[in-house]
Length: 254
Image: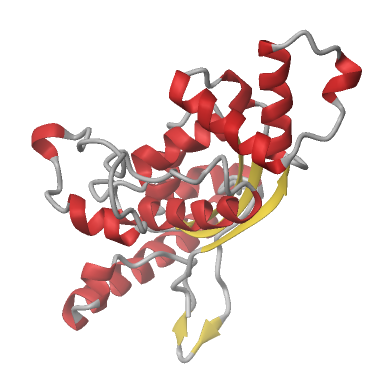
C-alpha cells in the first residue's frame, strides 16, 4: 500500500543535556573556572538552574544541547512548513537523485509513489477514491515523462529533476532535522498548537514525547503557547484552551 505512516526517531542528542545547560548557567553567574564546571552538578541544581533561566528569559544557555531526529511518512506539504524554522539543520530525501518511477505492477494496477492521505479524505470512501485515482494519474504521468526524456537521451537525475514537477504535495518524504533545545521550545509552542496544520502538529507531538524522555527538565513545560499563559493566537484562538491543557496534563496555569 503506497499510503505512508508517520515515524519519528530521536537519533542523537547532546549527552547530559540538562547538565550542559546548568554548566553554561554556572559559567554565566559564578567565578567558576573551566575545570570546576566539569564537576558533576546535582540533578536538583540542574532543575533550579533551568527554571531560573526560563523565568529570567535568559535562554542562551539552553541553546547548547542539540537533538537530531529522523522523520519519515510526512508529505512534502509538511516538510515545506518544517523547513521554515530556520534555526535548524535539514537533510531531505531528494526527488532529483531518488527516482519515483514505478515499472512493476501490484494487484493488477501500477504501484504509485508513497503518499499521505489527509484523514478528512480517508474517512470518505468517495473522496478517498478520487484522491487515490489522482495519485495513480500523477504516477502514470511521471513515468511517461521519464520514458519520453530517456528516449531523448535525458536520463538519471536529469530526467528526475524535470519529471518531478508533476508530483503532488501529498508525496511522502524523509528528512533529518537537528535543532537546539531553545529552538525546539519555540517549535513546540508554534506547531503543537491546535491551529497548526494537523500533520506537522502530529509530528511535533511525537518529537516532544521523545525529547521529554531524555531532557524532562528542559521540556517540562514544553508544548503549545497556551499551556501556562493566555492563548497567543488572540482572536484566532481555537477556543479549546481547557481541552489542550488537559491533553498536556496541565491542571493550573502558572
